[in-house]
Length: 135
Picture 1: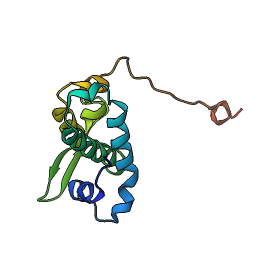
Picture 2: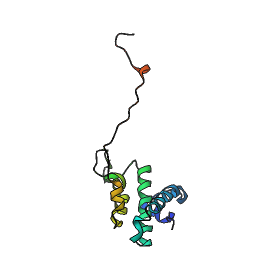
Picture 3: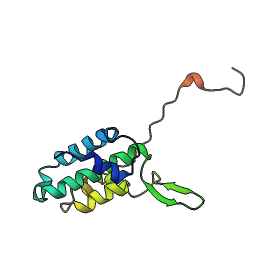
Picture 4: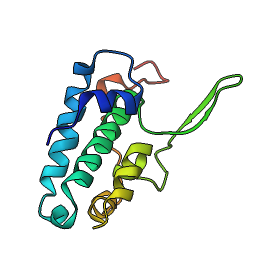
C-alpha cells in the first residue's frame, strides 16, 4: 500500500501542496518494501504506519537539514542534531525513531547502526595555495 499524502502532510505539518511530498512517500514505501522479508511477521497495517513515519523521516532529513533535537517557542530557539550524535540513520529524526519503535523485528535499528567509522573527504587544489614569499 502506498503512503497517504494527506497523512504525510498532517504528520510533517507541511504547508505546501501534497504532491510536493510524493518523493518522500515513495522512499518511505520503498524502504518498507525492501525489508519485506524481515517485516514478514509485522501486520500490513503496522508496515503502512512504518512507511508513513519513514516518509516523514526522509522529509525531515531533506527539508529540516536533519532532525531537530530542541525547539523553544518563546524568544525562538532551535538546535539541530550534531554530526557526533549517537543517533544515526533512521534514529536521527523524530519520525525515524517512531518507525524504529513500531518495528518489532529490530530491522530498522540494525540498519541504522554504523558498521564503520566516518570518513572525511577533502579536496585540495594546489593551484589555490598561497605563498608568503610572493612566488
